[in-house]
Image: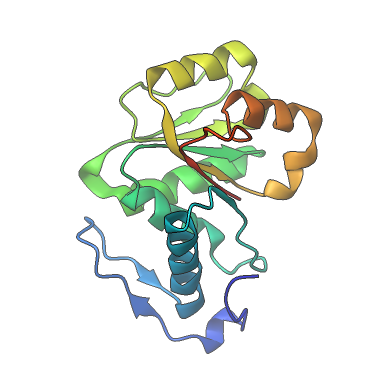
Length: 173
């Protein structure tokens, strides 16, 4: 686990000094998680997990990571409420620096979207190939990654190249 995992109410917020449209306030353990991810990536670790209790703000952490990513970002989620929650928080973190689109059912993300929030159930091979062909994802965020062991979810990660040694992106769950 990353962080001290004390209840949120016991933590004092730390201001994030980014130049984003909207100032983001991170709790100390959220900043610690972000720092740990960035440091691990600098050491060459490409696949990692953030383990925090329910309500600790994992989406805030992922939103911050997505907002500082240099390349396109893919967020994988299972349930519709997770898709819309992620889209709203990501768009707030990103501000006017790009769009956050949903890829689900009849909704197709724009090729210009900086961040794509995708329903795992909608990512058939042909649909995933279209997303990959539009732009290689530099950061893949897998919300509720404990579902990653399911066969179809493994297929998605394989097709994204996440298990390849030559994988140049970062996978965070």
